[in-house]
Length: 180
Image 1 (cartoon, one colour):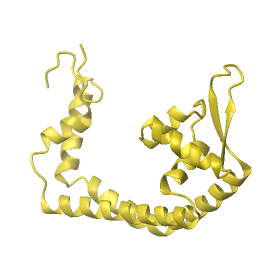
Image 2 (cartoon, helix red, strand yellow):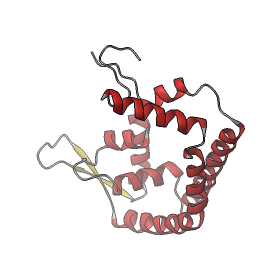
Image 3 (cartoon, one colour):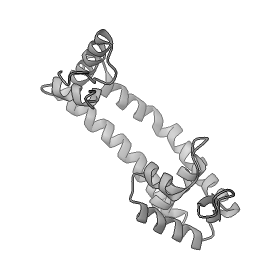
Image 4 (spheres, one colour):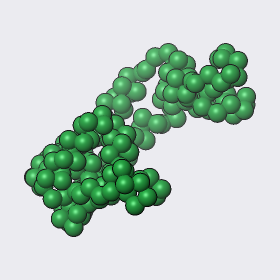
């Protein structure tokens, strides 16, 4: 029987402590993420949307091929409850930004689509976000690289877990016996 243990689980069992540089690099990464998140939230509000409404519109527009644009899929992609996604769609629909339509084959299925007004607003916001990422991106990438730097204790533990998994032929740290 396969044990569901991810590399993440293994790494944090192996990494017994963090050094000061690890804390500093993690804090800097969180700071850079939060800076962009703050920008995004403010840009959404300036455009007349709540941040989660913008996130839902972006998730809808950016769904991978083969994923049906249903509320359940969007709730999963946003990591929110189904009823919360329903309320977001209700508000976006009332604002003329999203429309519901019945599925072609199964009339019980409700599919979502951006309206032309929603497409325009999302396009403007996305260009604004892309420009901001061009400015903030290098600092964000540098912070991520510092966290992932091979000298950090977390990165060293991750490297050791990957090497162990490749030697034993197991993926994601899973073992057949349940032993580590």
